Image 1 (cartoon, one colour):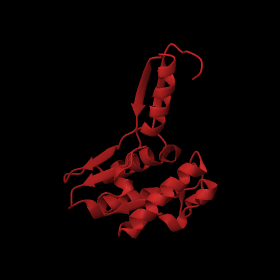
Image 2 (tube, rainbow, N blue to C red):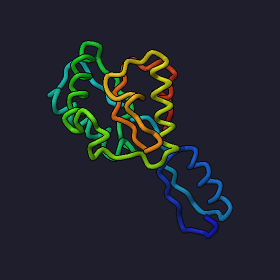
Image 3 (cartoon, rainbow, N blue to C red):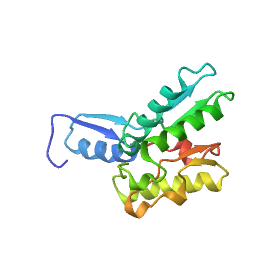
Image 4 (cartoon, one colour):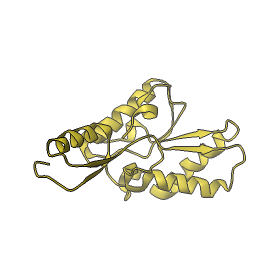
Amino acid sequence: MAQPWDLVFFTGSGRVGKIIARAAADTLTPVVLELGGKSPVVVDKDLPDLTTMANRIAWGKTINAGQTCVAPDYMVCHKDQVENVSKAIVSRLDFMFGKDPSQSDFSRIVSTQHAQRLYDMIVEAEKGGAQVLCGGSAKCDPTNKYIAPTVIAKAPKGSRVLTEVR
């Protein structure tokens, strides 16, 4: 960013967005920042086709290991549907990646630093009493940038899996 640009467009985290904005300010370069947020999935009591819904949620979350700006981060589900939806998503992940996703074509995380951050978030949720329905910290290998597809229920309020933005 030492050179002036006509415009800088950045999509990513707020932390890196601040760095970009400060650097662009030195050359008075206009900046458009699309900063990460939380992307919820809301499931009402009256479900459409459960299989189609689970397929779409699993695909949307796992494409590029969830490293897209539109990947769902968490789900708010009607209490009458939690068990059915959870089972359907876990079943779809098993279908997509097998019982050992580390041996599948499931993508890796972009860096070991980011993999460690995600791993730490899963560990924090587990220690806080979250229910791991599939995946979990024991199936992750952050040193090799592998974070297993993980479904967590009853994550503790305030835990980073619910609050941290990309």
